[in-house]
Every structure is written in C-alpha cells, then in structure tokens.
Amino acid sequence: MIRGLIFDLDGVLVDTAKYHYLAWKRLCAELGYKFDINDNELLKGVSRIRSFEIILEINNVTKTPEEIEHYCGIKNGYYLEYIRRLTEDDILPGAKEFLEDAKRLGYKLALGSASKNSRLILDRLKIEDMFDAIIDGTKVQSAKPDPEVFLKGAAELGLKPEECIVFEDSAAGITAARNGHMRPVGVSNPEIRDYCDYFIRSFAETTAEVLVKKVTGE
Image (tube, rainbow, N blue to C red; front, side, top):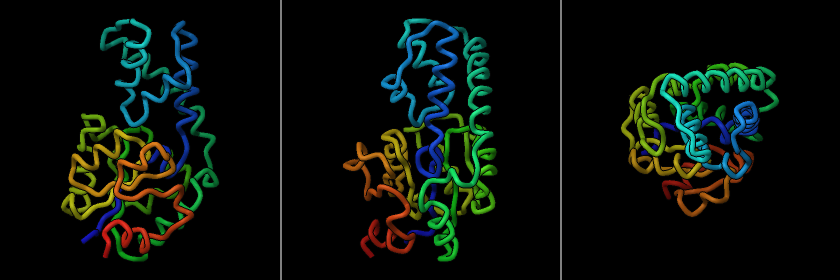
C-alpha cells in the first residue's frame, strides 16, 4: 500500500536546471573550459561536486579536492543569484495542486533532492510547509543512482521503501528509486518513459488519487 510520495526538485516541481546550466557555463567561461548544453546533460541528477568533476574530465583537467570545493562554491554563488529571483509563479504547472491533493488524501510527502539549496527554492515557491520531510544535499553523502536520498526520505516519513512512490525526471533518479525498492514515476522527460512504472508530462494532467491507482493497479 502506498502511503508516501517523494519528490525530486529540479525538473519535477520547478525548472531550475537552466540556472544550473547558466551558472556552470559562466564559471567554465571564466576558467577557459569547454562546456555546452550537451555536456550539461551529463550533470543531471548528480551532486555539485560530481558535476564539476565531470566538467574537469571533459576538459582533461585535474584539480585538488580543495580547488574543486572552491570552484563549486563560486558556481553556487552564481546559481543563487538566479534562484533568488524565483517566485511562487515559477512552480511547474499543476505541481502545487497535486501536492495539495496528496496532502488532503493523507499521503506523507518528502523532498528527495541532491540540491543544497532546496529550502531556499521551496521558500521562494512558498511550498516548504507542505513537506513532512526534506532530504537534500546537506543530508546525504552519495549521489543518485545511489538510493540514499530516497531511503532517508522514507525513513523520516516513518515508512518502508515499498510504501513510497518517487517522482523523478532523470535516469539516475529513476535508477535510484528502483535501487531503493520504490515505485518510480517519470515526470516531463520523455527519454525516461520506458524506465519508470508510470510517466506524466506534467502534474496538470492527473491527480494524486488517479496516479496512485495507475501505478499500483489498485
């Protein structure tokens, strides 16, 4: 029986991926590194540190852990400049209504995101108080497809993994959900349609009640 819903943030509830891209591109331009929209696809669903490591690998450059931490801090500063401009109007279509519907039906809600800026984003969107648990990059060590972020989300909700549905827009996130023995629902990204238990283009096309029935077959 499904009792909990766990949501990724970027690409699921809000589109901040473009701001990550702009921030990384700005940093890479300053460093003289190659980085384009195709390279950016490799960074989806992974941590900030791992993202910069991938950029270094693309450019055949090595940095010390201290240097990596330093440059990731600079990138995050650029990113924060962009997301501080977010408003509640930036939540993706139907997402707030879906969360409200799920709460009304008694589902426990958790956020499971690699972002260390999750609380700022949720605050800007005015939906932070909808979540019973918030697990983000400040609370986990392992990046998706490791299921740590989702397992911690289920644990904070007081639920077993098999009692949870995970909403994700990346292949790494879908794999993480499966690795954690949870039911993955793909959102917005058609490339992951074949890897999840159910797929929606947006939350505007369904309700929590209908979606859970579709996923479980009940």
